[in-house]
Every structure is written in structure tokens, then in C-alpha cells.
Image (cartoon, rainbow, N blue to C red; front, side, top):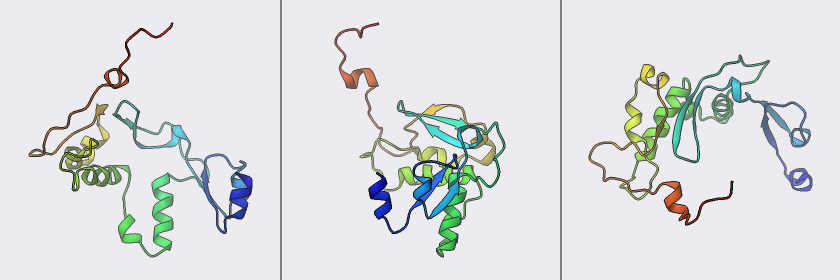
Length: 156
């Protein structure tokens, strides 16, 4: 890894720790937030979307990932395309794009959640996808146990 990163002409590292193996090779370091400092949503392997609220303040110059990306995009001349105002705006865009051109071929679709207002986003309870806009075909999916076809109990 060290040889590969050393050979890169430009390395950017975003991390919540200042001194790491990769940050020592970076041309640009972006101080990131740690888990307890982040605000937004996370989705687990069971398709469950959870609203995550920060319970610690951002330390020093650390910024949310979306904020750092928007800053880089602005410096590259793309500020209007990354003009999010916060996690709710990003979620709305993400939800809307999940349904864009999706006629049922892609299982991931939370387009019905794109219409949440700011208050509803902040009050979002854990929910699993899909969440389809009306008029789209239903999505069929298997639960994890069926997909694995477990035929005997796992050892304790």
C-alpha cells in the first residue's frame, strides 16, 4: 500500500485521526468527523436506514464528509452542483436519484422519501428500503435467511 500511494501524483486523505499510515503520505489532509460527531443517515446490511444524530461537537477544523466534498467541488468550479445546505438536502437528493430511471430493475429505491420536509427528515424513524413512489412496480426481495438457504441450525 505504501508503494502504491507513494507512486500516486496526488493523494488526499480524509480521516478523523491526525497521524495515520495514509495521512503521512497525503498531499492534502481533510480533517473528518468521527462517528459520534456525524449527522445524517446510515444504512446497514439489512437495508435498514437509521437517522444518526451527532452527540459530540465537531473538534477543531473537522468537517462533515459532505461539507469537505462540497468545498473541494467549489474550488474546482462546481459549487452550484454541490450546494447542499445540510444532511437533509443530501438525503432528499439521494432518495430522488434512487428512483431516477428505476423501473423496478434496481432493488434500491427510496424515492418516496424524497418528499420528506425538514422536520420529517429529522424525525425519521428506522425504516428499510424500498420506499417507492406511487405508480412504480412493486419490488420483490428475499430476506437474508432465505437468500442464504440455511438448512441446518448454526452452531452456538
